[in-house]
Length: 244
Image 1 (cartoon, rainbow, N blue to C red):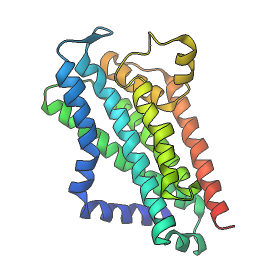
Image 2: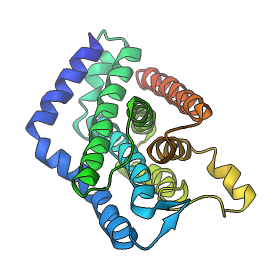
Image 3: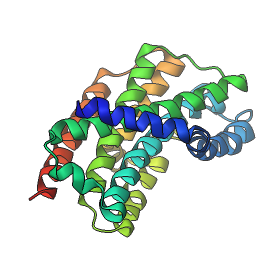
Image 4: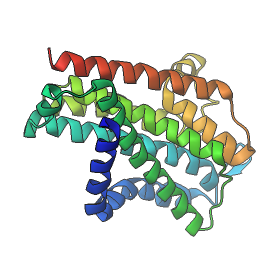
């Protein structure tokens, strides 16, 4: 009941703001495509692939990360800190585990939507990459992961300024160091090992492997699922701590 209620509410929210939500999700990734893809794509080849085709999977991974994280973290933090409406959930007879899952699913669907919009835009400009069920599934896993992380972040912050720290120190660095725009092959070994711990690296490598070589490493799937479980548990724990 909790899950369906939240999903329906978020769907109605999306219906009323579809244009704004779509434009906000697309503007930044589209600028990256224009600047790096169409601006440099015809002159640069990485790993035997045109640069435009190389960065599209990375931008899709980045877009699903940002959109799913923001969709959940902003909604929850505003409800908790500004509107004070989230307290109603805390005092109502609801299952907090299902409540957490509902918000995560809603945020993940928003993230997946943003990723598919980027894919459609790239196709409109005749930048075709290989896409199959595994590609969509990995994009969904990435969206679930960062929606769960966004929920946890929103539940532990004490002010809106604290959310900026999550964005500045975690989300933004992953955008640029996880291989979105360049290959990690020339990175120092120690730095590369640290980067490969980050979840976005596994998402980008998996999406890029499918798009350019029609294969991917199943280890990355396992890593993403582990991150999802950890952040989901942390989110549920933070929810129960909120009512105590």
